[in-house]
Image (cartoon, rainbow, N blue to C red; front, side):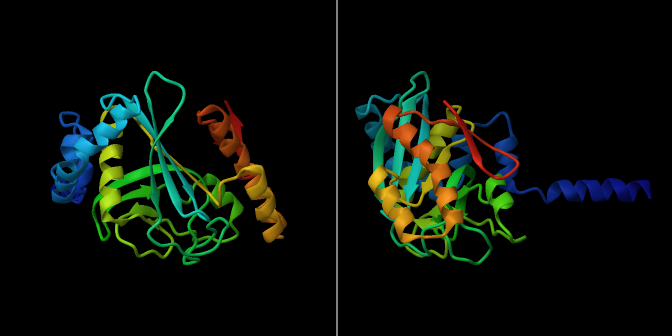
Length: 256
């Protein structure tokens, strides 16, 4: 019996993914672990020089920087921002168009609704073997999504990825995902614990915000979008990201 338990424990450890083992090994950096995957290696060959050049031209040190991503569903646009670790303000590095879009404006509230989520997230996984070349997983649903949804199954496979197909993710073509993936690997390898991605229904200046409320009469959407807007406004005014928490009602709370 004792030998059986030991065998089961060994087998359980054996089922741990190779990716997990590589990333948890303190003797190998995140970049080095990622470069063991063929697609990532090719992406670095294709894009590393360009990425570092873009960063340096913006005054960003490729060896020590933080990354921030914003997505706007109506405009079908991804913005990539970066700052030196010691600085306060972010600088726009690149803008990528969506390759295709799906769903309507408004948050994702259940599995299979084909909605791109809206809210404040971060990249929770790097996928070097994606069905769509390379991909970065969004930690959706977050606590706010779970509290505000009436459904038990909210889905959870939301990615920024290559290609042009989508049923709720954001595709930006293989070429552009290689660039963003390389930039994200560099940021994480150099110490950024979480790379935030904020997804908005549109650019939430006053005119767009009022137009959004006029087009969609749903009061719940008005409350939700009004809750998102301060983060957009603050970043537009200061170039800085607010600290974000979620209360027990699913609302976002902010501090500078």
